[in-house]
Image (cartoon, rainbow, N blue to C red):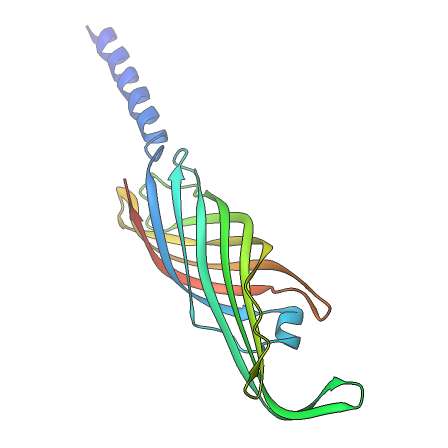
Length: 211
């Protein structure tokens, strides 16, 4: 009798471990976060040097298991800066004095893979790492006084790397959590004075289970 009880205990443990391992399989989650962006490199030197608090990011992911999830990320970041009155060269022997304003909106749409090594455990703080690649729509307008360049939004290759922590509201269920992280985003721009619109970002928000 003890022998069969011991075997039953082992089988129950294996069954519990297996169900725990795939507890996140098929679970869909929505992540919404406020985002602060800081221009880097030529983006900062030639277009906008100020950081932007006018942004948000989000993604919808589906779990493969407790550690890995795949999904689609989206968002927008609005950069804006006005420069003092100065004299600019428009063409040979042609100059104009004006206030210049640069306005850039970056709207990425990325495929993402997310790794959470301790999800499904009772850890109070759970680290994560994310990588993504896709396209970013860039809307760039330069105002020379009252006159605008009237550029239309264009799609550019984009990639990102992100890392941070999640703090579940329930230590036995990480499907709803607060998230805090930092990321680097690359956007190919292909302009003579800026080949890329690179940004460093800090974001914070919440994760919710969809199904």
